[in-house]
Amino acid sequence: MPGSARFDIPARRGIVLPMDNPSESQPSKARPKAGVRGWIPITIIMLAVIGIILIRRSPEEETMRNMHSFMAGGIAILLLLVWFLLLSRIWQEWGDEGIGIGFY
Image (cartoon, rainbow, N blue to C red; front, side, top):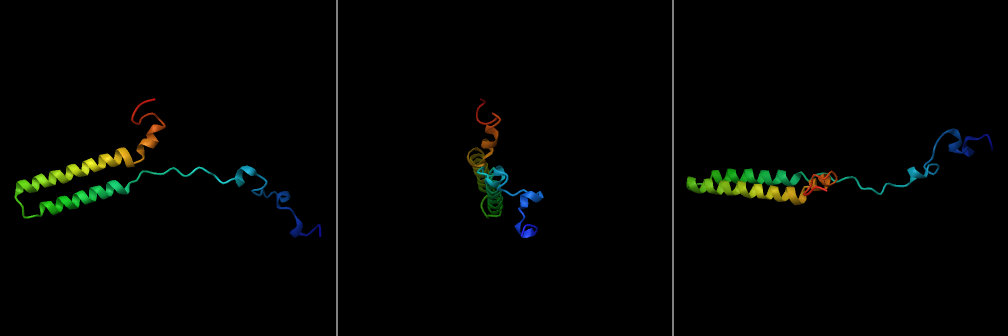
């Protein structure tokens, strides 16, 4: 039946199907850009704060508590530096603009 809506081709009525436009039918192969891993520094800072609180509440001498607190903070700073340099993915973003480890 030529007048029936069942037999009409949708593209003739102004509807564009994906097969009519080949660029839309191809799935994008590019993966979304991965963001910075923010949970790692948050965890490091939380563990450092908890550790320093536990050290400060211990019954040790004041000098030992100060030294252990300083060491816990230093270890946290070193871990944050390792995260920033190796795991943060910031170098990937900076590398495109030449701000990374070296200039082009």
